[in-house]
Amino acid sequence: MAEYVVLVDEKDNEIGTEEKIKAHKDGKLHRAFSIFIFNPKGEFLLQRRALSKYHCGGLWTNTCCSHPRKGEALENAVHRRLMEEMGFDCELKEKFSFLYKAEFSNGLTENELDHIFVGIFEGEPVINKEEVAEFKWMNMDELKKDISENPERYTPWFKIAVKHIKL
Image 1: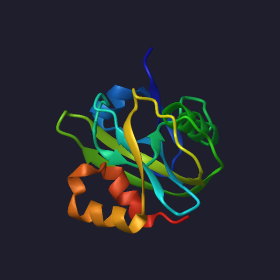
Image 2: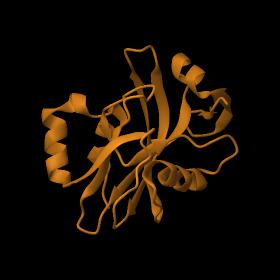
Image 3: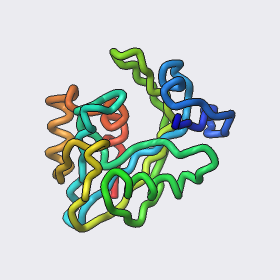
Image 4: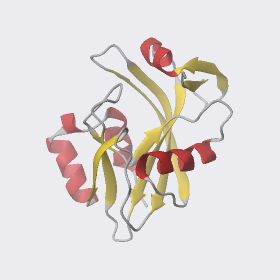
């Protein structure tokens, strides 16, 4: 069954839907979200994307990211997807959104209006191996240093958003 993304304009007004892979082949602007989870000690939960992902497989990124489904409220989508990928749910607060565009060597383009959500969770995730290769908790100072020294290890949207993340 084909998955669809919600196409939007630069002000996040819905203008239609498109099959997910076609939207990424054509570079159409669509709605997305990225979730950043911290533990009570202030460490950040990263995931390494499964190698089988259609782009950025094997790269480190934020705790969870995806697209809301057609007709699905963004607030519902973030909780659904966090549970599907990481096996837990928690309170999430939207902090900001931003536009970005990144082209990949496989011919796909991410052109997203990315909504950033932040939450706190104490425990260990139960990852979905089809989506997530592994996870780790990391101090933000160490993370930012590693991104600076090894940018190729991280997804493009993550490198933008992490500069603005605060609990």
